[in-house]
Length: 229
Ligand code: 6GU
Image (cartoon, rainbow, N blue to C red; front, top):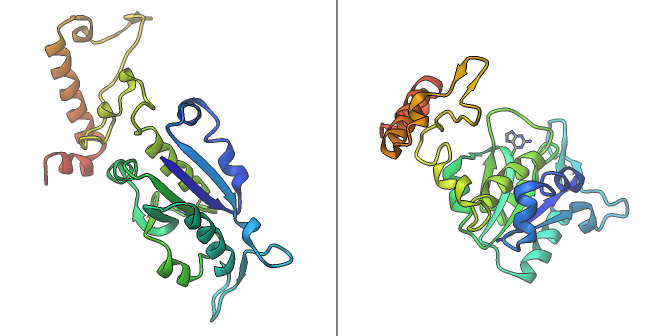
């Protein structure tokens, strides 16, 4: 899978993709992540990418020209399955969306900034608008990092068997059960007996029970989905 991210702040996104699992996914050739500095596409002599908004209302708006050039340049190279814009007024991102994006071949993520982008870009190019939660960030870069991370870890071969995405929280609308490692007793704190039993069926039943109980208590909204309500 290839992900092209268009941003005015590529520096922010260099860190998140240079470590651990995502770094390894890139090295194995399972994911290509390309950062594009929007300023490089500006035809303005000062490399400006924003301008005052028409009508009343404070705040700068990301202009059409650099974004159009960036997107058209990429589209000339390959077809894109999705052109995503990160914005607080987008649809809420969740595991289902991550699963769905992980099946695409090529996607563009355009990071929002300032007071938004010229609506004509949204009307012309954007196929999906995504928000990562009901709060406001200074820009869409962290959202793009979150989307990319959650999608790349789902690609076949990225996670080993023991960390398989199939047992994730949210995969079946349940939180994960508690986990323990050695020692079996630490300063009087004991690991639940059943986990030491060696009885796979008992262990699986216990884990499921715990997952259901946790979800009911911590995420009643998710519990309703689990029950199919
Ligand atoms: Cl995608 N962008 C910004 N600026 N704020 C957000 C967001 C995105 N998602 C939640 N808050």
